[in-house]
Length: 151
Image (cartoon, rainbow, N blue to C red; front, side, top):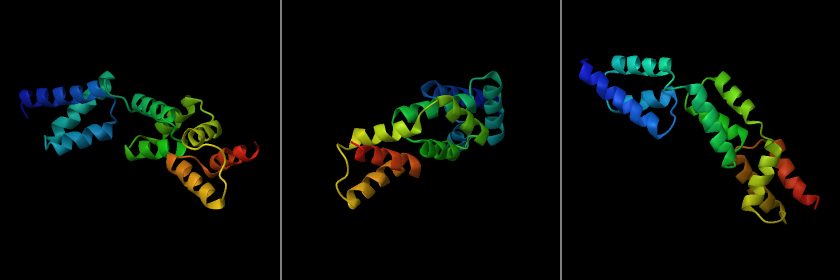
């Protein structure tokens, strides 16, 4: 636990954060994979968090915005943030700040992949599974598929 070890860990964490935002849990996992001194890693992570260089709140907001712009739904974004061990309150805050109409987003995701309406039940089910995979709720999927029937 020398000063040299601390510098190595600080440089590693700074390099990871320079590439993209990371959740605290992601950083812990990456440091643990390198089999570094866990107590020293926790000290460095606490220092980075205290200085504002690492923020789960900032990570959650950025992650949610990027994923929604890629056409993913609220359920998938929420699930992926939970996998990254972001606090539930931060997840809810990030999703609330998006100000996205999830019904319109489901329709856009559908229209980006498919042309026209589904001609049979099997095709409609396939499209619904795709939208479910993207993270949209059943109501949002129904809206996206039924809005095509109105035309």
